[in-house]
Length: 415
Image 1 (cartoon, rainbow, N blue to C red):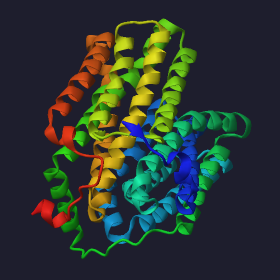
Image 2: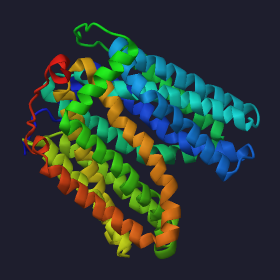
Image 3: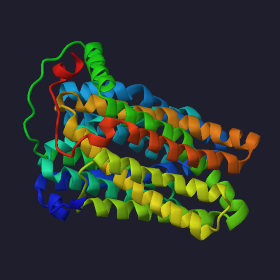
């Protein structure tokens, strides 16, 4: 590990600074949306089950369109696709804000607009990873990804609080309109940034492009191993934490205040981890990413072992630090070692496991805990994270992949 001289220098560049402002603004709006949406549904006479169905209507199109979003971004350019996706999300949220503001929308209105927003997210997300390397020089990539990690972490803390304040004082329609406005800011910023030229690559049919990306992904061991581990992490580790953690907090620590403190410390840890990565890099980034990601075993173990709140909250803080470091390193390695021609497609496969398996874990955590007990589920979850991390470190590509780029042409890899 050594210091990275860039520090905040990455924000000195006009184009990345503009992009960062738009990205952070959009993140804040996205973090506000769930709170505003829940209260809009309840105010319209909806039930908790209907709220869950509407949230599922957002997730399903994300899962369906992520792979195609990667293909389209690689064919047409990330910026163009991201702008179109943000226009769609802006229109969907603005329409919902108007519908909520002028009356009590029917359930189908929420469902259709949630599906449109999810479709936009499915097409927007793959381009994120592919766009950043065209905004900064290679030595600044870690700092760029770290600054975006800080923005994500800060938004998860500030977004719900801002939404709660707006809903309480002005109503959910205003909060939804603010979210729509943040998408408009993102579109404007994406239109203003200047991108470094990208070589033109001959394109085949859409299905052939999808297959080409899949073959590259499948033939690159470290990529599919890290993606599989992260997918299982969302299924088996974070899902029990988010579903069962509040139950433990209610029974043992007094309820929402204790859980709010725990989550606030997790967010604080993620900010600290992102700030740390602004000035540090590692000779073996995937080893560091795997070890720091293993910190997520700590809060689940603390909850499962019935430790005091101070230990649970402290473990959540460390998990936040570890996740920010791990995510920054993994993203940077993907950008450095995957050819630009397939980067958006590879990014879509990375995200697919998270979106596809995460909701299954959220659905299953409660019934499984009811059958075998909360503590066993949390302890097995913690043990899995430690075991999976150890298994990943056995793989030579994980241990030896250097920080510097080794990207080869796609044709050499999939041949």
